[in-house]
Image 1 (cartoon, rainbow, N blue to C red):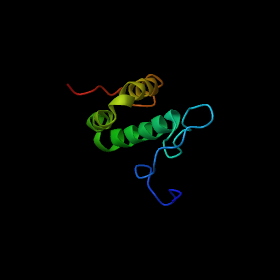
Image 2 (cartoon, helix red, strand yellow):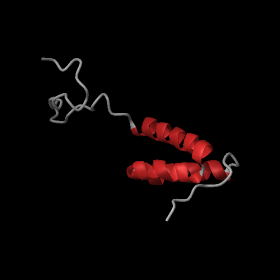
Image 3 (cartoon, helix red, strand yellow):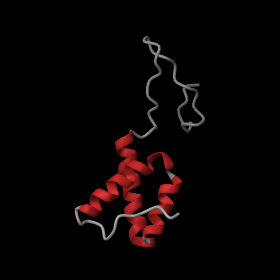
Image 4 (cartoon, rainbow, N blue to C red):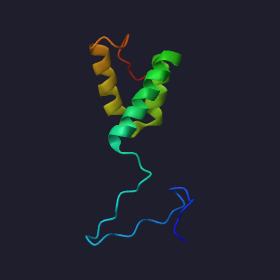
Length: 89
């Protein structure tokens, strides 16, 4: 079985190459693409639900929250957002 038609979670781990390292998992988004997608999600949430919507996205993605907040604050400083979102306490 070659793994075709299986989801990433169902596929067996890749075999190490000749250097002993495993090749990258093809279905895993690269960090810049993931951050771009999450930033878009934050912007949509900000428009639809305000700062609470952004905070919800940040809570769902804690590993990327700091990088997302930096980008959101930059957009706010540039005047592209009404206010920089702050996590609810």
